[in-house]
Length: 394
Image 1 (cartoon, rainbow, N blue to C red):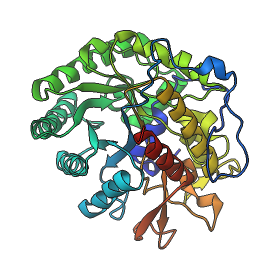
Image 2: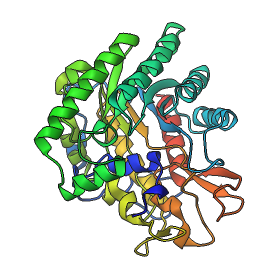
Image 3: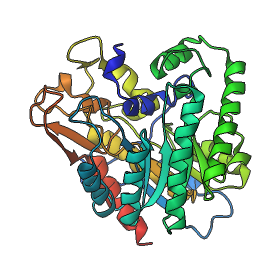
């Protein structure tokens, strides 16, 4: 696999579940207005109700999307203030989200994006994700980001600070590998010491929590991979990046219920699916085999068939589960993936099929990475916009 072909954002969506989650079964849609066909409802509806004690159903408090700030893979796809402002407007007004997770690198970009989101009335999860540098640098980047979050909080913004995400992948030394991709490949191949990994991961999570507490006095959390063993007493919110796929709502509820044992709010800080038939079953690793990066330009592999409907149906299903369980928040990964453009003219190069984003990137000149581009909503965007709007009126 050619490493330079994958951005940190696109990598994270797949790497989060690497070697950790075996996804099984399938649930395709309960209310996908505008899609073709009639998806079957979840099996055993009586078994899919919310846990005991939730008779006064509230649903999610925060519904939203993840938004990456970063350099991009070309000058054309890097963060700009003007594009960010337009995106925040769309997230609030068109997607009808009430929350956004602002993640990535660069304190100034993180701060500007978080402040813009707050000014538009969005609740903000601010999460730095500096990777592949010494631990001290990662913690310093976290502290600077946390100081801005604290200034926002004191000014009245609704903001949570996440100290990071899935450190096992991005912090050097927890598992072998010079970068995130080498680490996930070593995990897939079993080239690591699981006990050492658990000890080092726990140690760094504790250091990050202390750093976050030292500068930020609002709600603190950490974006854990699904099978991470985290000491949640360090945090105010239990957060999981969740890409599982099951045949029934009851299976989702069974899997997610244990996160409530800490007696703290539970947040799904990432969830999503790629954009091809069968992608929900592939979960967080959908990106891994979908593109052949040894070719130039990279090609979609295995004759995959694009399906915006599959992505949209999956997201509606899991949001119904999250609502039924009265979880604190659920955030879709992610809003836009400019380095994975849609190619309606040639499915072989439709890298958006391997993207988790709610929008599709369209370049003016499809083969030119420096080409001007814009995004258009996918079916998943429209479906979630309807869901968010209805839920917000309850």
